[in-house]
Amino acid sequence: MTPGTSTTSGVAAPSPTPADIRDIRGPIPIPTAWLLPLLIGGGLVVAALLALLLRRWWKRRVSRVPPPRPADEIALDRLEAARALLDPARAREFCFAVSEAIRFYIEDRFSTRAARRTTEEFLGDLVRSPTAGLDPHARSLADFLQQTDLVKFARAPLARDEMESMHESACRFVRETRSGAESKP
Image (cartoon, rainbow, N blue to C red; front, side):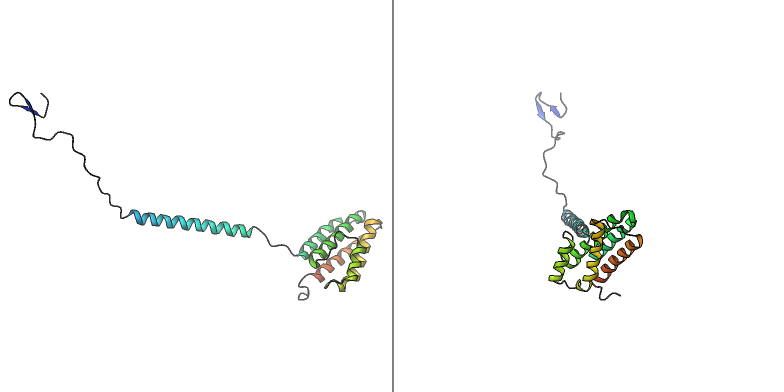
C-alpha cells in the first residue's frame, strides 16, 4: 500500500488529503515604485559625470596650446644665448648668432623679409619702402649688419669689448622697437 490511498473495498481510491505536489500559482507581484526613481537618479549621475569629464577634457585641450611668445622675448633670449660666444676666437660664430637673432626679430616684429636675404638686399628694400618703426633705426641697423657681415664673411677680427658693444646695441635695438615700446620707458 502506498501512502495517501485507502482500501475499503480492496480497490485503491484517492485520499481526500492533498498530495505533496502543489499546483502552479501566478507570478508574485514585486513592488517597483523604487525602480523608476532609481533609474532616473542613476541616469542623472552618469550624465553629470560625463559632463564633468567632457568639461575637464575641453579645458585641458584648450590650455595645451600656449600662446605664441612675443618676438622681442625670443630675440632677447637668442641674444642672451649668444653671450656664451663672447670670445675673440669665436667672433665669427658670435656674429652669426647675433645677426640671425636680429634678422628673425625684424621678420617677426615688422613682417619684413630679412632672415634669408643679403644685407644689401634688405637695406635696399628698407630705403625703397620704409617700414614704420624701423625707419628711425635704419642707419644704426645698417652699421650693425655691415659690421657683422665683415666678421662673418671677411673674417675681420673683433675684440671682446667690440663684441660686447655689438651685443648691447642689438639688445638696445630690440628693446627700443618692441611692440608697446612707446608706453614703456
